Image (cartoon, rainbow, N blue to C red):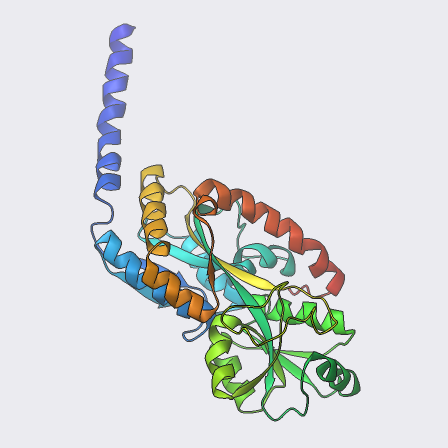
Length: 325
């Protein structure tokens, strides 16, 4: 009996060695970061800043692949279905991994069960931006205009279920208006149409909105956080303008379910080094993204945080009637 147990243990050890070796050698080739939105959007901008430095730390190129559609679910689904070897991961958002679980009646995946959490990276405020020729100044005038013109106004988003969509759901509910939603395949195309005057406003992630606000291509109305953003210090919050509302996104890295613990740890450690790099912090701060503290960048924290975020958004989404098929 003892001999059989020893043989079984030896066999198990032999089987386990290749997996251990693979984890120790990780990564031995380029890795792919799936950005589940179109190029040029806020998640894409942040992902490319992170990806460049992450590649230097890992010693392998981080290939950025934009896979838009279904509010980020299409790209995220690709990662959920990928081989859990650490070579494919997704830069998820509050929209792809929290809000979408309620927004979609039949989501393409279960955010908690179909992914391995790696690290929460940053939080990014959302700003209400309007076409530059909209004859309003500030949130009060914007609300008055929206109430008078609700039947002909439109707002854009990065897609149904995206953080930009639900940010505007929060805004329109707070304003007491019902305005037509125009979904795009990413924030980049939506911002182009806003600048072209083909839509009236966009609840945009500040990292992408800032350069267009600074250049005067779009008009900033309010920031949807409790405090002003250092990236746009002169832009008052909605609360300051008499209408409290809050909406922001976050970015986090997820691997497919079943990723080896050693691989998860190595990628998490590399991401932590990335986010602690002064140049990365400075670049993201300029975009309006706030790097979360180190104690919130662990796989365990992200797992807990994700469940809380799913629960937090469930009620407002159901109350808003924003669910889609």
